[in-house]
Length: 101
Image (cartoon, rainbow, N blue to C red; front, side):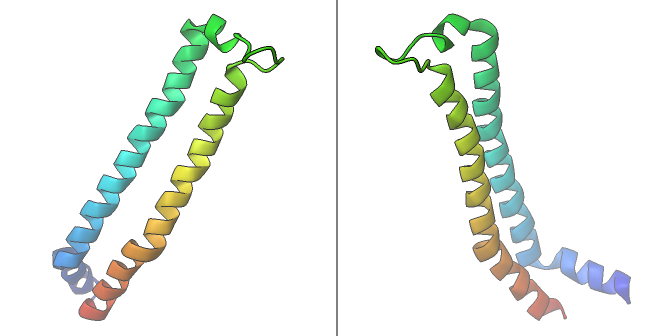
């Protein structure tokens, strides 16, 4: 019985659409996060003088806002994924459950 249910789910076109969209979206956000995170890491490794440059006459250097951007960016893309998962992905999941069960 379970094998039949699994097979019906796997062959459902909406399930295949859900998997494709979720994977594509997840990999896109992962790539963006990798660019931001490793970009910052490369700046730390190869351009410390830039990060140590003061912004205007203040005490703050460029490293602080760029580092904060990395943290905020992580929170924002997590929020974007959760919002899409709670709307589009959950709707597709419910449709699949109604069709298969």
